[in-house]
Length: 205
Figure 1 (cartoon, rainbow, N blue to C red):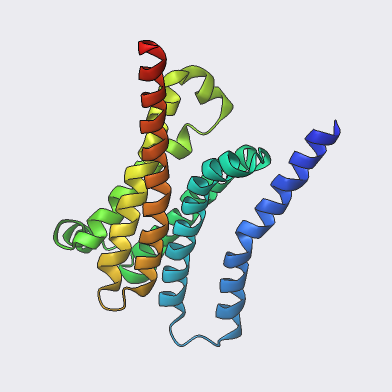
Figure 2: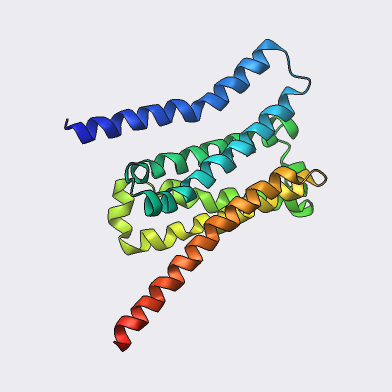
């Protein structure tokens, strides 16, 4: 392996360990019996870390733009997969611990409780991104791969709305996530508009 390959491999191993730490901490707290409501804690924790990893995937592009640091771009796929992993755990907590796989009750929630239906939509939007994250799918889809992965933006918005509807009263944390997302999306809109302006200037010139 070259030095760059070793550096990338070590970065991926470190990222893997870091992304599993919240899950290990949750397991430790549950096993220790110090939690009043362990089910609620795990459900909220997995939901929160879904947002954290998803938001970090969106941070990487502006980070590279402003710093020139390219290594995080090589780690974005792993961050996205961990976001989907925690989203699946979040869903599993609801299906298993909250509803005990009572499918009629789950369907009733899906149709009658907006935050459940919007959360399910967010996971459904993340699913094709997780499936097509391999090199093989990137080769098969070619330019369509980038178009498909624009689904990350409606997935992030749906995840944020799910969080707002679930919290209801204390909106301080959802508002913090909303502010960060607004900045990240605003930067992308500005960059896209600026590129189009430069292209028109070049064409007219």
